View 1 (cartoon, rainbow, N blue to C red):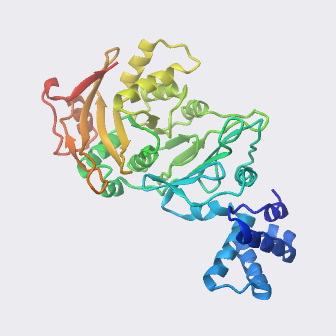
View 2: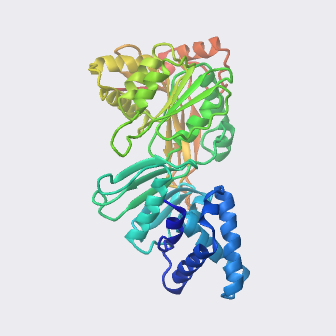
Length: 445
């Protein structure tokens, strides 16, 4: 969209009456004063600063008389409408907001601290919401219309955007913007109560001893945050390849190759899937493969990589329990274009997966590691999970909090031996099981 078209588009604020007309009026006056060719040559930050200065001069010259706060707010609103995303702009700058959900023009929700709340904001109409959506998707060279009513993309600033419009959506244009917080270390997650120090030391040992780890949880439980923290434990000298739908991981090691899938273009061509990237990564001499999320046939390629020498791989999967995670991996692997019997897939998972870390988001918004389970079965045996840590939640307190305590169990001898051979200590809280009777195991089929 050209600079002139962006500045002269209708008011997107959602304010009514004189307030909205004031914004529209000053945007028109701003357009008369600026040199569009000169503005187009400026960087985004310089362009915003120039518009704010010019608009400040216009208000000083022509009025109205405003307080300092009102003047700053008017300038912000006009410039946000001209260059930014109108009423969404302040939300994107609010670091406490992790998700913005626009359910049609009259309902805007945000997530803060794990809790969803509705804001007293609205767009003036469906058309004005669509203009904002079109502005967003145009920054990533995408188009949304009746022939292409769904868009899933990542903005240059890192936010993940999903759009779905009529006729698929019956409640008007729907816009979801997911903002990703900065990366956290495991020590910081301990401070948040997501896990404790004993679990931290155990997970650190498992990652450094090259156990294959699956991080499992429902939407919004913090899978990517934990995956990023676990990835930070990989030794710096290893070659790490990350594979994601939308690049979210922020690894700090020196030898990291980041791969991101690509959706089809407007003509429907050029799509590169996660599976394509997983297959290609095996030809890139990786020491570790980190898959942001497995959700299709790439599960088979990842499992084959894990069981054929690419130890220490990490991935996330959507599932509500450790057992569900194994079932889902099996189902996803069966979706590949390779005909493999379920029995063979079962054997593959037993061979490939070492650890499942289950995450849960509680009613008070807290995200916690609720179980660490080791896959202690072999070959065609039924999946046998040995719980080595879990969170026992207590009922919600009067102040709306859910507290609880972490509990630990002995490690299987085979796991202890692998940690020992990798020179990784076993945290004292766990210990080692003398025999199978001491393990807290359960079967999953």
